[in-house]
Image: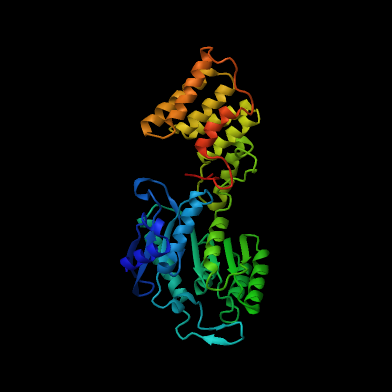
Length: 422
């Protein structure tokens, strides 16, 4: 099994597979009365840190792992979501595991197809909730933010879990869910859940491709139901040009972005960074923490670029407040020290600028950072200005002063906006 999983990863994502280490575990399940294999992939650097991570559980583990691993790592690397732990589920009989009732699937031609082994989703969900989730949370450093993702019958199962076990999962991502199962069961269950006191909450993202009129009709029905559910963040996407088999890629990409919406602050295309300084950045991440249910500290990069944005606008006092706050929260960051030095230099406080640049230079040298020489150049420039060798101070919009710090963090250009907790 482990060799097979590795082969699938290598085939689907060769460059990524080089640094993937998938743990394949067989669990004895009292809920199922049988053993089940699960596939666990932790983020890079997990073994060497103390951070906690949200968890994405997903159906069809072997087949889906390469796709979700690539998607999650790409979005995390661009600051659109945090790194996550991936847990893939296996199915000796996926029809049994993923369908909530003994029923039939109505196809677009109107034919109702019976599945003899259907109806075991509640039992499989009991395994996930009672056996698997506790094991994952005992074995790994997790945040209490769980996503359940699946395709087709797997999407049906994800929607079923949100209505049958409210609060266990904070988000569901359903690619082309089987909405015509058992007399349009998903819509009925959502309607019932919305009428209950414990209701339905969290984020639900579901999609349909070009799959026919019946699928479109059931998709629109569910979309209307969820649009009126105040406690639900719902996103329904019609993926034109995709068929039932090809919707997972776009669905998982959109679903993960929606689940972690706000992980990266919105920034105007022409801006260096977020506007409003430290107060705006910290308020944004307080609100995000409240929505997600776990602490999301304001990221260094967002704070520093917010300070540099103020500097570019000529608000020296605001820039100093924001960059001092950045250094307060990230005292070991030589990039933050360098940005603070730029703010001091702009304010004409050359001795403080030189000291900040020196701290950045020393720390970067000790870390073997490739930008150490740039920090040295800033230190030399500030020292020369202090000794009178440089006659004029920097002015608002001075690109020679701003560019080094902006470049060290990466500007908010479309291809390089990596604002997010690291």
